[in-house]
Amino acid sequence: MRTATLLSMALLGLLLLRASCNQEDQETGSSSEKQTETPEETPAGDAPGDTGNEEPEDAPEKEKTTEIEEEKDVMVLHVNNFARALSENQYLLVEFYAPWCGHCQQLEPAYAEAAGRLRAEEPAMRLAKVDAAEERELAEEFHIDSFPQLKLFIDGDRKQPVDFTGQRSPEGIITWMKRRTGPGAPVLDSADSAARFIDSHNVAVIGFFDDLESEAAAAFRQMALDQSGSEFALSASPEVFQKYEVKSSSVVLFKKFDDGRADFGLPDDGKLDKGKVIDFIAVNSLELIIPFNQKTSQKIFTSSVRLHVLLFINSTVESQTSLLDESKTVAQKFKGKMLFILIDVSDVIPEVLTYFGVSTSDAPTVRLISMETKKKYAISTDNLTSGSLAALCQEVVDGTAKPYYKSQDVPEDWNKGPVKVLVGKNLESVAFDPTKNVFVEFYAPWCTHCQQLADIWEKLGEKYAGHDDIIIAKMDASANEAAFSEIESYPQIKYFPAGGKEVVDYLGERNLETFSRFLDAGGVLPEEEEDGDVGDEEDGEAGDDEETNKSTEVPTNKTKDEL
Image (cartoon, rainbow, N blue to C red; front, side, top):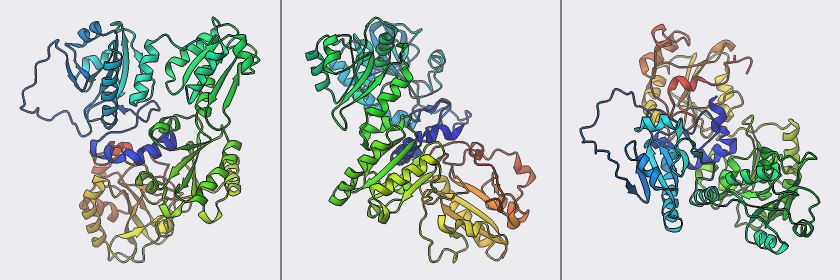
């Protein structure tokens, strides 16, 4: 299902991630959709637009030998030197990538930095990469179905590599490697050692167990290997139990912010549920109000909390920062149900504001997003108080809140040209006019295929300008939304027939002749076009390249009367 991964966006995840990196994806042809919910990977396969029939370039291919070359401290591997690399390196982390993958390109500088630092600090730990789009034999051997995939090979064992589960940043990669190859979580056998451990980390997670050889302790140790965002330790010392007032086996998270600690008690059977503990750590290792930045983004993206409250604040305005302080009581009340995220409009990527229809002058303002339903909610700036924020949050939890849909103002000359200009505020009144057949292109200004379509669409408008019952229109769907229509790809074209008939998703060729035949036939695609392959003609899911026929997975068609 295409939307689960892109909004799983986590919805805020890809909302913000896409807003901050969609320009690169549009240029590189990468997609953030895959079969598992990982917004940092692209499905394996041919490069976008690759038909498999193109003639190879004349440049001679360099002979592959067992010699190992390096690029920025990263070993370049292929089928001929892979075995040698495994035999010569005790710990080898290998990135399987594709040159055209946007997420691979985004990872490249962080991966290279981690490779250089590890080479200097820990010579036994090396990083390598494999062009899996070219090295199909290796890709098949290690079941590479998305890009990038990272696998750790230990002591030359190619049968059971360890999947990388850390953060894709230099610190995240280094921390994960050291944790996976080191002695594991330390044991704290005194109150002093526990105090030093807690004081030396911003977030410290300690497992308190009566028996360090128990199944629960073993599960805690295993879990700690994969959680690179926090530091872990264990203790069975009565002295440590007493100092921190722990009465029974528990996992305690100590932090240098908010309330200072959070406790997770094990059930009476003493078993440790790793999933629940991971969720507990994810929720409590973040501040009550989380500043959105590169360091916090992955924790936000991967959080199991599905409601996100975005506080747009200008940190240079004192009255707005005081509102932020007041909002902490609301965040505490809904902790575990919602994530509260601070977006400083004085220091934020402009695309983030554009996506939410917020300008710097709108601050302070709030947008609340449900990752499950994709619905957004808002409070006007004039009515924003900690009380109104709490009320909105409760209404969303109760399911009684009214969704918010962003819209530009209606242009004064919206209906003067041959192509009518629609926005969120006038889309419904125009598209659902029962006396008109309305043909609408939903586009994004940055979409290259939308730009290529612009002249054709203008000519179509000119051609039907004299038809009283036909309207040719367009709407910037990146800046406007509607309750009845969720646009997931650009360009997306819809036909709204007169008389309350079923709305039609146009799937034919995008040229003047086919558009005209479609309109002249009353919104019916010419028979020879219905089953045709319209080709790789769109920028995909709000910034992600996919074939046109895949973009048809949109909400079920409805009639004008139903809408």
